[in-house]
Length: 609
Image (cartoon, rainbow, N blue to C red):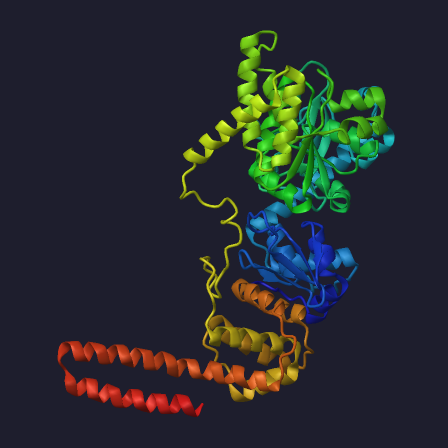
């Protein structure tokens, strides 16, 4: 890990100024559980929370994938930053000053390019916003926005801008600012001229909506054409900093409201989000000109258990909502669907009725997923005919049969009975037959859908089936956990065991701990983890920091030491016994007798430990 020349004092200040619960809570919806907090791991897909954060230890550990560490490690892993980048960002957020030279480090070429692309986007957004608000060129675009109900407050808050109808306004200014123009093409701001040297602006004569990453940095634009040009909307292309499949519009603003309410409202477009957000729906987000992806669903589920889908009220919007509904449910979300009047989109509805009515009637009136599926399915059948009704009833019962709770099934069967005049008894009989057929067709060897979730990870970092750890392994973990909390225990263990831990990662962490205390440091798991260079060791140390050490006395510590020292002898005795068996099989009785004497000697040594 490249730490550059960042002083230990700066690292200590960063750790002291940032509470891990607050930092992790920006990305993960955390729930109190005892003295710790738990949530869905941001580093692997899961439906049951296995990601644990300790406010006391200022560390985290996932019991599913093994990820662990302190607040710096979390920022590194969640945002793809190097150690110096993570420290610098956390320091800047906390107002911790860097003296000259403290923040210097060798950036990789990729990191340099990403930083330059983001800086160029920030510059471009400021330029475009100025052109919209303060120039005659932007007057028409500004008038259009106001005619669509955009207030000046929204325009400023979302930093909406205007790209003029000229070929190289941005290209010239980026060149004057010494930005690398080929890199700016790679970053999606410029395009190379065909058949000649030079570059021209990607966005021209368009209203521009900046796109931010989860930390609020501008990484792209969505541009709406002025007039009748095509395409109507043009998004930034895939770049080193912008990926549509992972980006959710307005997530950085909506995140506090989503975390507080436990609910996200998902729209199709950024205009709907701006209108909803501006009129009070602060948990509004949208995908960026692409269908919902698994990455989007995972990002949403980490922040909220409940999702309201609010797509356009036409057939295309309902079909898209039906697809999104399935994906969000598969990710573990509880999903409802807001039903807009036919042909209306959220933007139209808010403009006509206002934000309060939109929330009260549309969002709060969102229907459960099963209800929406039935309503959406019904549109495919000719319900004016008896044949169409019967086919719909059969399809609806198949859907109801898949619902997990009897009360849900009873509710929707009663609705079908009331609406179409069939007796509840007849519908239940058919439902029973469908469910019985489903049970027969289900493969008894099918995996439990939840069984994949929390795969434990060994100290070597390899995923596998959870297994009981041997006594020496448990003893080593308990000792190291105590050593993280108590310098005297660490010195006691150092005198009696040194680095004689049997698990390689444990021996390495012990060596680091001895050095940590030798430098005069006080017990601080978060600070200790920050000093580890190996990400694998950071994961293990993160899990050790969450180990329960309550009630462990001095006698237990000595018992742990004995268990650890015994294991090499036990392992050697097992090996010798296997050698003895092989000597017996080969007829080498003299060799077998010699090995037997060695085993007796080892067993005596084992008893003396």
